[in-house]
Image (cartoon, rainbow, N blue to C red; front, side, top):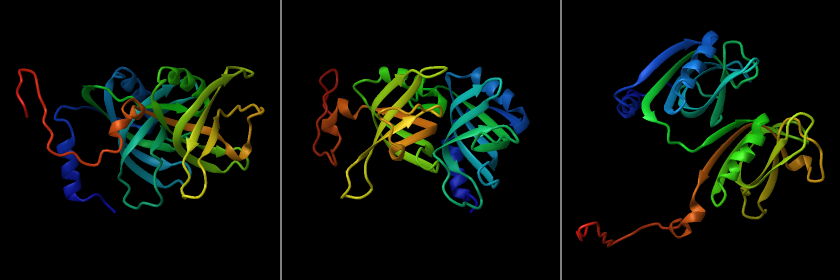
Amino acid sequence: MAPSIDHEKRLDEEKPLFVEEAYFSGARIGDAIDWCINRQDRDLHCLVEGNLTSTGKEVVFRGRILKVKKGVLTRRIAVLVEEDLRRRRVGELDKVLTVGGDGSTQDDVAATQITVQNYLKRNLSDDLYYDGRELQQAVKDLERMKGQEVACTVWGKRASDKLPIMIRGSIVGASTSPAPILPEGALEVRVESEGDTSAPKIYLVAQPQLLIGPRYNPNLTVIASKVYIVPYAWKQAPEYRDVLAARNLTVKVKGGKKL
């Protein structure tokens, strides 16, 4: 279903008045990444048109750029999907999609066209994205978040049968261990059960070069391809978590004035 006129009008009203835009074909994704790198401290968004590599179906979506990566073999933009603009929607899009150039087979989307937007304000978002092979960096970053509860969404394959799996929960552990090339990072994610009868499960989230060890349980191990982390401070102010309503409040500001 195409977006309604009212919906498009609302999006236009929410869009900042001053936006720097640039347009790139999928073949020029390297230039798009360079554009983003030069503005990496800004709030960057994008409109992506292309094909889902898993199905070959056309896809159009709008989102916020989480991370860009440009290397000898990898040219990738990770996007937090904010709006699905497909005319015919078959299934839900992942919350985070990786975008590669035209003809890419290693990313979620092979882009044919990318519009990148600089909202001309500093990026104050504290959410983080990692490719599956970057868990050792995730472990380092999590060291700075001690005392906070951290939500985590992981996309990958279950180690036991290699079938796709997505889990969402809170991080309860992070560690590194020796590996043949670089230290290997691993996360422990506590996932609440969907029913009321079964207990929560703790999954081991591992890098693709997983080394089998004493903690290894293939049924509760996810070989990660994408990891999305959101820190939040519920533990710092738990008394506010369950507030449903507040009445007859008096607020005193500087100068003695009461509101």
